[in-house]
Image (cartoon, rainbow, N blue to C red; front, top):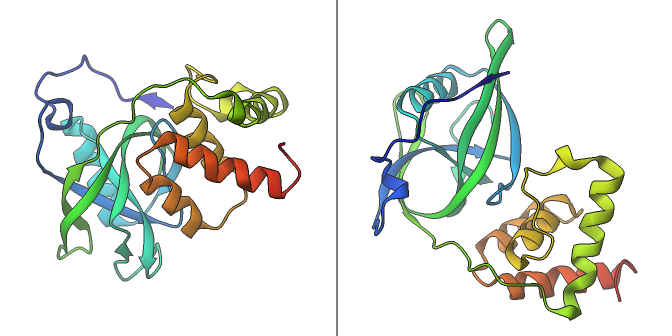
Length: 214
């Protein structure tokens, strides 16, 4: 795949502080993207091809939101209010008309208002949600980190973007939220939580109910 490169630019609006709001194109999907998560995408609709080209040209992310109403293809879907910025890391087009993307979740955001353009592309004014502080995992949630370590050993490191942070409460909570077999609505609620320990508490309860933690 072709990396999206260029040296960092100091004028990226989401990298400045403070930021009250910014405009982003929104890609409603049947998935929930978490900060630091990897999301491969196959883009073929004209509206999203144009969106992707524009984002790569300007070196800006787009927003990913879980679909609240509608579907990924055809009539524009209504997105959930909280989503995550997606940075394009690599791209290729091995098949004409199909763009393969490798993206990574960045900062979460909350939609203030959104509109749909003539081509069916959703754009939104969003406010960024502050990143959660990096705190060590309390001993009572240690089984959450151990489960992730087992997953990496079994599936390989490529399942998660590096660097891995098995001792960081937010990182572990995000990664478990990605891989556990819970409904998308539950993943959305986990994304919306702003306290990493509360998220781990929910995940620990789920693991205990399945006999995967004590």
